[in-house]
Every structure is written in structure tokens, then in C-alpha cells.
Length: 319
Ligand code: RI2
Image (cartoon, rainbow, N blue to C red; front, side, top):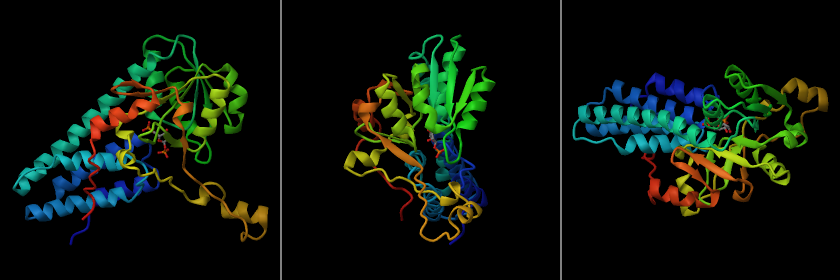
């Protein structure tokens, strides 16, 4: 049994440590890594080649299995690998990964056009975390000549809001950065909350960076519409068959380091820290889920999910 290609191991590491992050970026990287494994595999039989790919997929899958775009990317790429020879298998694998990456690329631009139609000239948006899908809606609106301003939530613990702020500023969108707990105070000045999704469940629940659900509840209370930008790669097919979405718990060091712990507590025992990465926003707090296939009320997303995934929730990374 050979190891996975070093590029696959590197990609897996980068996904695990969040060097590579954001659902679409993760999916793109996973597809790219499978293509490398396919190109570089020295398997001498179709069975060995398939096993090589399966192990690469498993290595990638195990990094952040709760980010659904990752298993969806693996499913998509692996589903189109066909042939009776290593050469055919290799070619179809490389082509399948490339087709997936092309589709992913176009999906975001299409989604952005749809989301931009919801934004009017002069609107102020509030963002949470960093989502390329959500930002594509703002970018498309700016490209349409609309003046958009942004209130950007910092998004603890990893502060990905800073990435959002920098990106928006580079597009000429005036940005005001706030700490997470200031969100409610600023909602009166906001026309749309625009967030992304890590995954979407069959009932229209949105799983996104921790803090999204609290923001959505506050926004609903203030009458501010909530738009979720999410490519269909974010749809979680396992939820069609009753599975729930597992919430990733990340290392407590992201919240508090040992020095700080020691300073506050003196003795780190009896002082627990929890660090859930995501939370679940129920569909009643979401106005629209914007995808590359159009805008959906959250309750109807199940129709799109069935159309795209059927009832097939293949797990090609399993032996
Ligand atoms: P895109 C991020 O999670 C955020 O929760 C963001 O909304 C979501 O991924 C989607 O990102 P993390 O990967 O695919 O930072 O829209 O944990 O870029």
C-alpha cells in the first residue's frame, strides 16, 4: 500500500489548519488534489488506481468532514471516473476534476448576479465571517454601478471578518468594522444582512460560521432581510435521509492560549473553553437562499436538493 501523493497530504493539512478555507475554496482544492493523485499515481492495475484515488479522497475527507462542500466535491469528481484501463481511469479523473472546478468557478459568478439583484443603489450590507459566495453578490452589485457600503463583523475567534473588510475595501466599498457584539446596535443602519453558508440542510436550515444564527434573529427582530449566498455545492444531501449536520468543534487554543488561561485562572483545571465553528439558523430567519440556479425561499431548497442529488448519497472515500 503506497502513501497518498505529497500534494494531497499538503492539501489535506492546509484544509485541516484552515490555510485553505471557505467552502468553495475547499471544494476546489480537494478536486485539484484528486487530479494530482490521478495524474501521478503509479498504479499498475485499474483496481490499484481506484484504491489510490479512494485513499486520497479519504485523506481529504477526514480533514473537515463537516464542511459539506468537501464530500460533495469528492462525490462529484469520483462519480465520473470511468474506464477499463488505468489510462482511461486517469483521463476521466483528471477531466472530471477540471469540469468540476470550471463549474464551481462559474457558479459563483452566476450566484453573484442573482444576489446583486436584491441589492439597491445606496444599500448598506452587514457581513459575518468571510464568504466568497456572499461577497460575490456585493461585487456584482458594485459592478452594476450600485453604491454599496458595508458594516463588517469581526467574527471571533479567527476574525475572518478582516479578510472580508480588506476585500470590500479593495473593491471600493466603504467599510466599517465592528466587534461581533455590536451587531444589533448597527442593524438599524443596515438594509441587508448578507452571509454565506458552510452547508444547507433539507429543511432550509443554514449552517454557517458561529454567530450567524444570533445575527439572523436580531436582524429579523429589526426587520432587516437576511440573504444567504450559497452555491449548490453547499447543499447537504445526507439531510435528505434524516441525518443531522455535525458541528465542527475546533481547538480551544483559537479562543484562549495557555498564557492567558494561566493569567486568568492561575490553575487551568476547572476552566472549560468550547469552540464550535458553526451554528444552525432555522429557515424562518432566512429570507432568501441565493444559488447559481436562482433564488429560493429556504423552505423550498429541498426541491433543488432532490433534483441535484436524488437520493444518492454515495461515500466514494469508503472502502
Ligand atoms: P465560501 C466559512 O467558514 C464561513 O462560515 C463562510 O460563510 C463559509 O465558509 C462559506 O465560504 P470557514 O471555512 O465558500 O472559515 O462562500 O470555517 O467562501
